Image 1 (cartoon, each protein chain N blue to C red):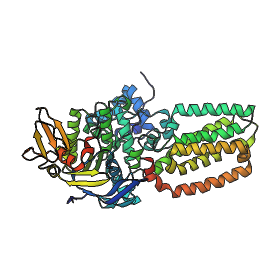
Image 2: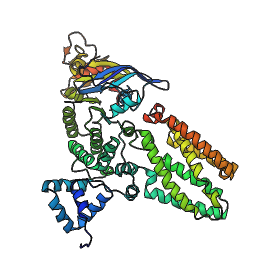
Image 3: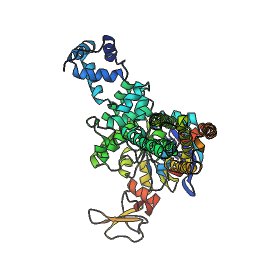
Length: 290
Length: 265
């Protein structure tokens, strides 16, 4: 487990069950300033872990603290929520609201009650996500990418010290993803950002640390380079598909890139973060529909 | 457009200093849009840049709907009124449907039995509360739960607003059922009891199923007991039930502070 020197959030031994299903099985991690990536196949428990840290769900056992507050007590939860920006996986909207009205609504939920100051903050965050021109449009008239930006703007209201983002780049085109990446990098300069994603390139380019979750357990906690190194000596190229490889696909050059146990004398390649992730999680990761 | 009325000096100064609150703020902004005299008086009070910033802010500001305006007029703070605008059961279309149903049941009560009116009126309040807040009902529920505004407080705010709106409509509808004296006001305590019971069950069942269960129980009770719940003894019993359920609800307020894991699988 990586222990950040400036720990903002710490979870220890978190267990959460939905009936007979164990969603989180003794998860421990700590978050400091910077962007932390959370990777894992569908059903690994990523969203549940984000909900626990975001104080939306109470775990069955374990401890969660943020900024020195116990997030499992009433007063501690309130203190954490006052410093939290949360973008859920499926952010809901009141579709008849305009982008401005929706973010204004969330700003009130975040205790910004003085009208003029609140509206100034709403304009600031909408500009931050590049929606200042669309602020008067009804949400039902916005594209999926724009809605995602509205939801992100709502999470940014109040300049939160802890930002929890559950798959914020799903459904975005490459240009929008690049803009989000720039924004997340800026935001991670002075706050803790926990980013759940299936995009390994986002993790490689943004994250100071990465956590891989699988079947409710932390399988890896380290830097992106260390994650890539998990596949060191296990990535090779050949002209034919290898049987028994963990993953094998033909590249644009016509040769096969393979991850797994290489044959003797194989032509080894430098592993990527995706290779490291595949090595850790196995084939189930490749079955992920996303 | 010419007008003979102009914004008083004090109000205009307060507006320039951003010290004017709704609803006076809204009427001032509306007037300024159509009155060149007041705009030039305002220009003398505000530096040009600040004036542009104010114009920007005014153009961005959400336009309050009729329900929000009424809420502010009766003294609800503007930010609270804004939170209540997302309540489906406070939309004009919903209130119109409730009013039409009440009038219809009142006419049926005159033609047949007052039980029709007394039984249906609490159900309308119950449905209004059930669709107002909760997982699967409010699209922003998860964001609300993780916000500093306690979800239980928002729930109570919306419930009280729905109860008040329905109570006013029901009270008006009783005028269509003359001849039964105070008995025809017997819908009020069942409305409260059904609402509080639904809230109590909603963390476990969700608001929709809790309302269906409680509503079905009420229909069975009225079908079986007819006017008994609306008699003096029935009303006293309901009063005691409301008190007990309210205490239980207050004790379980913390359940509304997080998502119920059984409901988010």
